[in-house]
Image: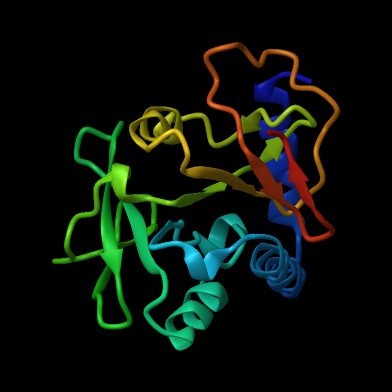
Length: 191
């Protein structure tokens, strides 16, 4: 399937999921992450704040668990810039005030900026991915522009509520592939 077809179908399936199922699958994702990666050894983890009306994986239970565990890993979250095309990244703490942007994504207010070169791992929201590590997001290209700014050794970990498709037909060599992808059932590794 093409990215456009996958995007349309994945959005429809995800929006049809009951909230309880999204919560259940989200909890399984974070269990996979904590069991399969050395999270406590990372200094910086970049993650997304979920858009509930889009039935995105809920990162808040993971965030709270990491905050309770102590200051072993610091959290950074993206903020869409006024140009509508780029992201900047900010430190998220339990005291960070949040404000919803025009897409109803919560963003930190008055937080310290974090450079992409500081990040040890990036959790990437996905609509779909394939067995070669190609990914399909919302189609705005935010992560396509952001991921090349990270250090090459920073882990690119997709987050998907569904298993992969065999192949994305219009994936191309310039796509930034994933190192791994979390699904509720398992971790897929590509490099």
